[in-house]
Image (cartoon, rainbow, N blue to C red; front, top):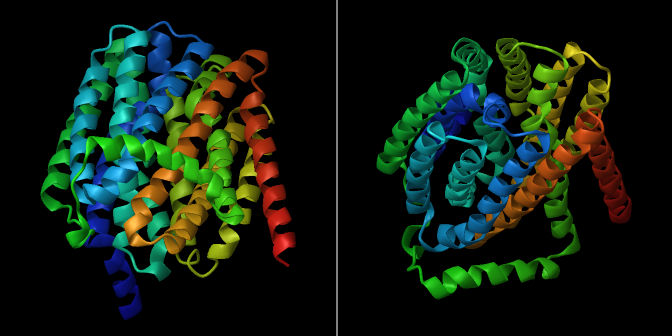
Length: 399
């Protein structure tokens, strides 16, 4: 019991506890908005290609700001980067409430994504605040537990849309924006800096020079580069869920938006239960997480090819679990290989690869969906099988 209490202490106190709390609060707003963002775009006149394009533009904007975000994390510091970025996200969230058409909604969403330049700071401060032997479990528990609002709240967003139409989804985004204000205040007054005396002065020249650091990708060791490439591929694989799966379920399978919310809640319930269970084992079996995650993703994608609502639930659940295990494996491996003074850069590089993958994935999802709705499941299936092949190839070379 004493060991259990000691382990729990790592996750609920200090910076880790603040991240856990604020990510939980963010999840309240996200649970009633994110499952319906594609619907919001469609209500404002967007088609499937427009929706894929909207996601791609927004991700490209975040990609542009993430690169100097890593520099700011290691220079300006973790805390200030997080505080400034959180307030910028709050302001742009309110703009999304009043968007008059899908084009301006895309612009506001892109600005919201660009404001997330501080993501490397979040990952870096999480790693800085955890013992190295708790990296995998710390990453998993801070990814899983904050998703508890997804167990009950997605149907609320669907109910608001069913009852009030476009006004309903605007109300959902207004609620989310108000919660973002609370998160910004909490982070401003509670987050503690972990860089110590190494916090430096930001210059415009060095800020622009941070883009040149992308050239260092070519000089990365082969095994480290493969970790980043794996992050890119798994990010492509998850985009069908994030972009057009709600359109498929609501407009192709004929499910009401509120019932789509129930399905999202059901899948997250299973995801959270599985995630909590895995938390007790991930540190011990960290080397197995990558291959386990890719196998689960492949099986879930294959299940999705069977038409119907229940296969979609299986697809949602298994792809979420599989992708989370792969990402946990990647982040914990990078955290153990990159020093504190370069951790912001290392994590920004990871996010760059993920965003490139998301940009490619959202565009391909929109294009392939026009050809066949089965592409929602074939894309992640093919990519998951490819990742398994890459892992097996690497394992053979290391024998």
